[in-house]
Image 1: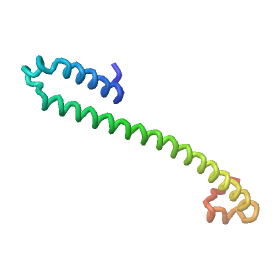
Image 2 (image 1 turned 90 degrees about the vertical axis):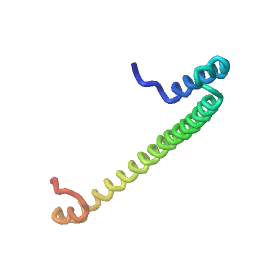
Image 3 (image 1 turned 180 degrees about the vertical axis):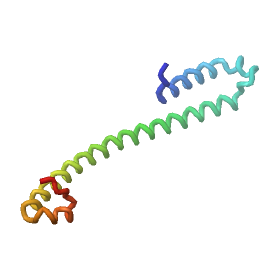
Image 4 (image 1 turned 90 degrees about the horizontal axis):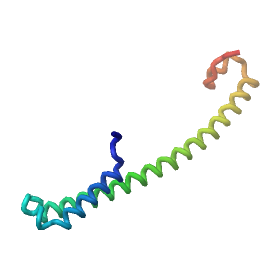
Length: 104
């Protein structure tokens, strides 16, 4: 079985917490007292905040990756254009100065 997503784990914890709160008197006899429920609730809230922050970072990463891809395309075009000029204006023996390996 595949691992649950963070959102699924948080939702599962929320359902459990709701059930525990609805039966607080009964579960208190087994050691799940008000302090346990308060910590459970706080930890779930923190997990939600962390998950939201992670999702925002993922969206930012996708955006930055797209920007980088676009900039690298532009850079590749410039390198290609410069290579053509270097190959026309300079002897093959000097191409290495420009990072061009002599292939022809």
